Image 1 (cartoon, rainbow, N blue to C red):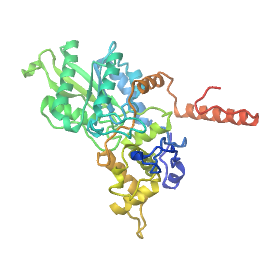
Image 2: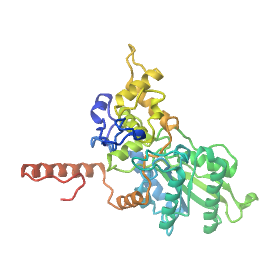
Image 3: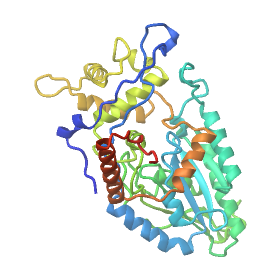
Image 4: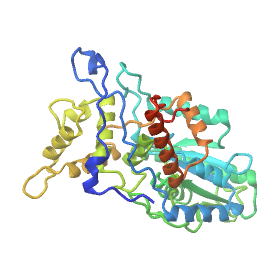
Length: 408
């Protein structure tokens, strides 16, 4: 199991290569600032956060499946593709034919507004409405779930009610005297416990029942079932056909055993899906800077830097000076500035945008990748070792090595 990178190793992990294209400038001004058109993530980035309690939780979830009529899968709207865990889907067999499923994309309010666009010189940035439409069409065409919902803090009443209605609809289809038992699952820190508390408040008018926090790992064990809708015996309006009511089981977030694409690990780290410190904060801040430049450099130049930059150290020095992030002796703390910038973005105070590109093509690629065998960390290391050995042999023979992931 990989361990968090130390401060000493942080600088050795990654600083993205500034790959720019001539003439690709913000605002179209010739000779102006040219942001990186791609982020070169170091292959040495930690690729796993699959902890012991993740494996144990997955085993206990499977044991509870026989009594579960509904899976509520939670994904992060900022990374709708990367926060999908196919391993959960395979292990819990949550297809509509086998067990009802509802997909909930949380933190929709931290996505782009309707008018936010990427630089048109590269490719248009999708609005939240466009992303929602693409995802909804994808799920409807594939019959992936009974319902697909998008929730944000600013839409508590409207969409929480839709979620409760969708769950009640499943309960009425099952038509069990004992009611419906559901399980909420997803990646770490995707918002499962928060969602459960919102459902309980909406359906029962009761305070929260699940502990929540800003960091992953707050929920480490399966909880006890929480009632989110009363049963017929309560005599409340809208409870007809619900038996004894609807009960939801909170579960720990479960990470994938291995993240094959290094940039995906950076996305997961930036949104807070892995423990802070696993990937160095300066590395994550550099990835954030890359996206800020892609969206609108004024998100940070108006506050921290006189001009846009691709150099994360220049960016972080500006942040540190403005926010007073200092070490003993008055030296600027780039680590402290990086942590501050990351938290600001997570709360929507440094731009609101998606890290995944959501198109029918990228969705298809995600499905293709999900259908591939899941590698463990040890298997991935063996594969990397074999590829390096092959490249060395080919180099000695004077044969050009294939690109990463290429087929010989």
